[in-house]
Length: 216
Image (cartoon, rainbow, N blue to C red):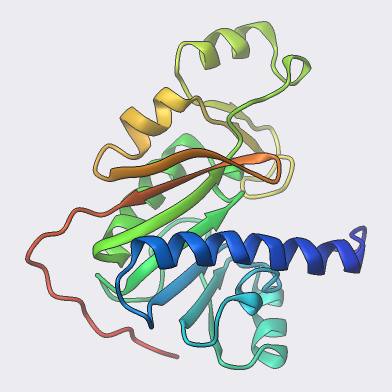
């Protein structure tokens, strides 16, 4: 899965990214023991480095990764999901969900379905942290794609299996602010995060009561 990656780089970037995620969660969530989900967790590169006082959940649609995580990473609950929603949990389950370079490999329809699912799974007042590909280099887009991107529209470079590394979505800021996060309160963003841009958004607080997570 990561056979071409330096282990040292993999480990160090996992620690560095986890520190950013931890800082943003601690700064925006009041509870000291938040329930946190990593959607698109892979082999636990980031979630393994988050504080053990968090209740940690990892989700991925790669069943092999989930099996490895369950056998090797203690005190974290891992669950497999499909390419499209739902996640195998109840509504209002998490204080925070993060997804780093996940929307960057999904179709426009999947964007709409997954952002609704994230909204469902967050507690009122919970936050979502998402990293997006917002600044494609000039040579990355064809002229018509660039025109679409500059007009604030999502650009999808498909032609391969959705969810794969080469299936690419490029996110204009207007699209994120006005479409993807229309139901959320935007707290921060865009913030540079190791080559992508991070947004932190909050689900509005209403009178809904959180449900218990259905564990495996």
